[in-house]
Length: 311
Ligand code: UD2
Image (cartoon, rainbow, N blue to C red; front, top):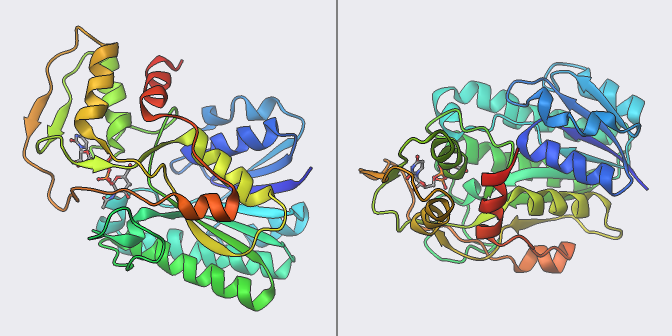
């Protein structure tokens, strides 16, 4: 069994990753400053004697180095981030501090304390509006937000550190992740989290555009499992991989699942397409299978029904 240090442990993806690591018998040190993470996401984790938690800001000087020096983990899973694309556009300086500088601090802490493996939360946002589908890892990188640019810069920083100092680095390029604990607070939150809240509260949802836009929606349970594999599978080499299903799901497909579960729901409102929206995004899932042995297991409709009936 391994000891993992997880940054962003109280977040949406972080808390599910922590839960799966503990379930598999590993020891976990979690850190989060609750900027967007939530204490209640760790309700299950905190009952485990193999879980230690630190409330701290990893972007502050010295914090991470001290935590890593004490924990001496077998791998570090770096999921702490400024997670909103919209916020990165409004405050690119904060985006730099939380999504680039903090990653450099992670790389340095790993170097100084000889952590052999790093797993990083990258994003399909590094591809921008990719012309060719499915998007393979070697597709052109053309981010269209400070968030996407920071994720790309972080990959380069980590892989550079990995090659220089002998650290195995796995960059996980998540596509559209959905599931329990995702925050629906802003209009720019993931569409499925917004739909879940509105259907539950009996409010109409808004479809921006004709609803035929497609995304590669992947369950957070699959994403967490991909993180566990990247952090603990023996003999991995450094590299990047899309974490996706390889399938396109339209917004209308998503809507139909919700409508079947809420037959009395108000009809959706159709609004203009959101400016800057891309029409289609679907990843190639081949590299994750080849490099990590990862294949998604949760069909989108099943994941949606689980989310609808959660809690
Ligand atoms: C955005 C982010 C992505 C990630 C993701 C969250 C960009 C470029 N990318 O991608 O990085 O943070 O969000 O999952 O910003 N929609 C509606 N009604 C709603 C909300 C959304 O029709 O109430 C549409 C939206 O216009 C888009 C699609 O649903 O066409 C998916 O929206 P999203 O915000 O969940 O995801 P995406 O891929 O645009």
